Image (cartoon, rainbow, N blue to C red):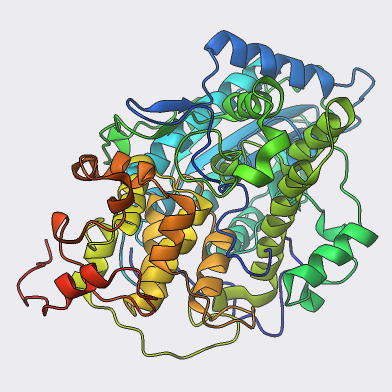
Length: 579
């Protein structure tokens, strides 16, 4: 999320990362800023059927969105530009507080919004281990986000042109067809995205736009790519240091920005963003259609358990209303944020933040409004604290470049195992440790697990199993609804001890975590129904009543002596086969 400010002496080339192969608090790992939060006291526990997030009706969601748009619309805005501007939507699938969109409107007479369904993103593979780059659950969420974006653009007098293909091939042809002078887009920081930016810019350089009538035709300069910073709460230009001088300790970063920087207001919208271009669309095949899972070669079986996130900007605005204003959960966020079961223990904003369907600055404004109208306390601050973590990981990805995807910022070389059978036992939720298995089954079923769960399964994979952290990071890349490269890989480097955090051996004791965060086994018995018949205190420590533990724990602390005796037997070589 921080801009062309990305280059850094310690960063490797931004053009060579992942297309090349296949397809805190100081004591705590921050997996995806807003994804976490605390024990089993949620007001709407997930007990049976899947729970929609948000749970608002369509009418209520629409009313909430309309009110938010009304508050951020200014009739006094005037446009002073000429010609056509293209807006290239990427990871900013929203209308509200989208500075690239507003800048394009102000600098033109007509705006053409475009989204490119890039096969490298939707059908490619991860860098080292060849997992699907975008799993079906996230693909479906993004499809819903695109549908909502199209709907909100239409309400503002525009539409969304959708094309399947590489942006560097699609955007120049579109710019030529509609005689666009500029392509506006949100700036990214990671190498795949930077490579595409570079290729789009080069493609636009090859285009000549002819303006004027037949009697006085003239060639104008080729279309330009204008990149706008817009993915973080604190703007990169407002930091009290350059990205290359970003502190390597989060607390230092947080204190500096809190004392020396301020969060900008959300961009105001004009009453209408129209019109779209009056000509050129027919020759490029019209508006196109939002893809389906089937057209992407994907399919998904909707889970009947856990949380079902609704994609789109309106759903995101509805979730803020639900969590802050309707259920008043914001005032207890800090106390509940480490929970693992139910929709209300934490904000659950992260899927919409990752897709850009929700602006972090809008969350900031809503927190401040809540503090003014209801209460300001540690919980309201802690939501902003988590957003600062999210900002920090985005800036770190700009500072350290490709190292976050490989050996980590400190280039720590370790002898990680890539044992396929061990990894698959973790991936599939059959390690023999209920807390690990429940989290991994929730991830596969819903595309989401709590922040606490992410820390625990990361520690187990790396510390107890000794597996290459990049296998875990790439599996999360496949599965998570809220995947974004900066936060995902930033957190995994932290968890693996290869990040810029000096604590290299952060260990989460499974028995301790289970006793603290799932003392009655409510979470594990929800995802592992075979444990429901056990006494509550045995659900996390089931011994022979559950499958054999795949590895012993690095540090057990005497909490599972009976289980350890049961599991000291050597794992048969043929117990787990690669499917």
